[in-house]
Amino acid sequence: MFLLDVLDHTVKKLKAQTANVLTLANLSLGGFAIIVGINGNLNLSLLLIFVAALADRFDGMVARKFNIESELGKQLDSMSDIISFGVAPALLLYQGILYEFGAPGSFFTVFYIGCGAFRLARFNITESNGYFTGLPITAAGCLATLSFLAIPNLPPQTFLFIIIILSLLMVSPFKLRKV
Image: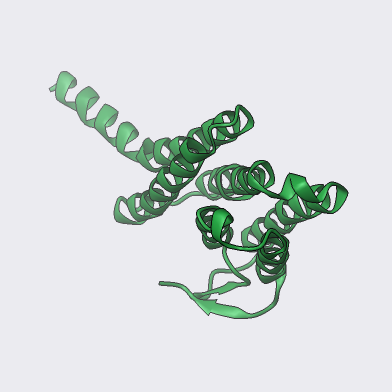
């Protein structure tokens, strides 16, 4: 009987950490995306950001399914999201094209990251009411990452415009229904 109780307790503890493990996978993938991007492997960076988006999608689903949502999980998710969908996509675009603009390219790369951090902080202190305020950073990061694929086909100035628009959309007051 004791062994079954210990096993049951262990399974419950593991289940309780499943969402956090997925969140840390998101963070790790974003971290690796940054490292490989800095080292010039931009295509692998792009792939890692999209795999991080999958981990991000599943961590919330798992937390709700197992009823293990927590304040710690919410904060950890935001910290992971700033890495995977703030810093990683910004550096991907910077390495891919924005560096060509010198100081303005650097400024708007950091501006995007700052707007993403603001967006996440605002989300964490706001009651969930079925709506997002502003564009979620995951969506902005995926759009920024997708835009990287168009670098050979669009004028370079387009990417300054994209990063500025995504930045402003993240901090804007518009409401977007959660799906």
